[in-house]
Image (cartoon, each protein chain N blue to C red):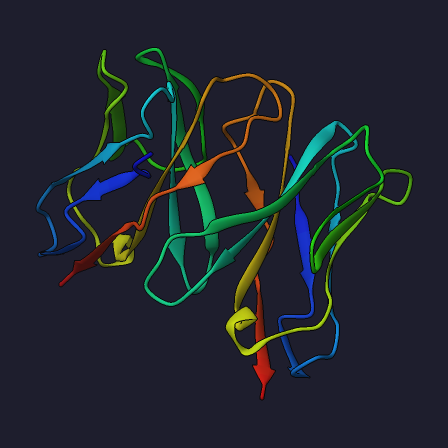
Length: 113
Length: 114
């Protein structure tokens, strides 16, 4: 089955710096890759997603890149702010198993003012 | 548009009891998935329902079950609770069961088994 690995598990940056979180997946049939942000006491919130026919997607300070050949995708946050502090999860799913997201273990991002 | 709602938000049970959790999807969404989140195992898929039918099931014992009603609301049930069932149970909804549909999560139900 699919396996998603996420690195690093913790990341601390200064406000204004960039943060990069990387994930690799094992199943080449995976074709949908969302990123979620989870704040304490809340459910995961979708921040950006990418589909297998796209290599890069950007939304303001957040961007995601996908390399299907290498089977990895990354989240880039630029100009980080204290409110970006949270746990970030990457996930993957494939046709026929859309409701079944396989999640990475999460990255705890701390942005220091 | 209101988001995914889950009730109750917190629950304390004792070993051997059973529990039922409820999820109301975003209006117009017909697919509901359930996940278990624990510090050790992270987020793990339980099952997915679409049009009252279970479409996918994760690797959990038969004590975990679910159902979906005609209005797309869903419930999950855990029987004969064990200490290890203590977790945050998350429900997510999407418009359809088709590939690449975005899933939106509710706030979760935190279950503590004593």
